[in-house]
Structure formats: C-alpha cells, structure tokens
Image (tube, rainbow, N blue to C red):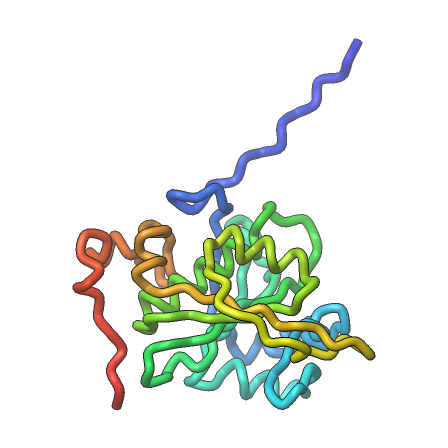
Length: 219
C-alpha cells in the first residue's frame, strides 16, 4: 500500500504575485556582527564590490555603511521566524537625481520559503520607491551568477547594458550585467507589493494616477 505524503504547507504570498510574504527590519547596531559574518564568507563576497574593487570589509566599515543616512540596510525574515535569512540594501538613497542602487545576499541557508530572496528584493524596491521617493532603482550582477539572473527575471527588471571584463573572479575577468526598473514600471507591475512600512502603491493612491507620485527634488 502506497504511503500518503502530507502536502507541504502553502505560504501566504505577496498580493498579485506567487512570491512568499517577507518581513523586513532596518539594520541596527545589534545586527552588524551577523551581517559582517555573512559578508566575510568568500562564497558571498566574491560576487560583490563595495567600491574600489573592495570585496571584504571590516566590522567597522560594515557598520558605517549600513547605518549611513545615504543607505538603507534591511534584514529579511520569513513571517513566522525570528532568524534573519539575509540582507537587502538600498544605496545612494539621497541622490538628487532620484535614483538608487540595490544589492542583496542570503546569509542563512536553513529552511526558508522558496523565492524568499526575490521577495526581499521586491519589498526593498517598494521601500525605495514608496518611502524614499526614488524614480529609478538599478543594480548589477556578475555574468555567470545563474541564481541572480533568475531573481532579476522574476522581478521583471530591464537589462540595460553590459560592462565587459569589469569583475575579477580569481584569475578570471567577467562581465557585469546591468538592470534597472523605473517607478511607473513598478507601479504597473506590483501595485500591491508592500514596502517595509506596509504601504503599497495602491494604498498611496498611485495606481490610478502615476503622475501624482511625489518626485525626488534636487536640493
């Protein structure tokens, strides 16, 4: 007689998507050791560049970066867990041109809902557009990072270019692939995706009139 297998419990999803809900928490001083440990892992930092080709940062530098007013570091969690899974970070959020950059890593590889990192990047982008008034959010990834390519495709970001031979992986030079998304594209694609504070494009009244969105102004 064939054993009956119990079905895996279904996760609550972000409205309008098949992505699992995610919880974001702004990085505090108490979280710096955890994030520094994640970023010290060679399997993680080999895909990153913190400026000037730096891939490893001291604890002090990580703390300075994540608590700067120019950046917004966000830990992400499954809704029913108190263990952080990884970090997503918006950088240059005070740019007078209205843009920002985004990056993220998964640091904890225990059980977690499928596509939770994609959900975290989506929620962080919502935070950039809705809470920080960004009009464009960009990022890059290293050619050959198959997992990241899948994440960007699922989010519907636009590939805007390629920087050839820009990233060193050991003795090998690889290209960096550029992606971005504009605010009106985000509103059309993810009207009900919540930012860290819980607000959505729809709750702010942006869905029917994208032109009414507040814009970043140069100081």
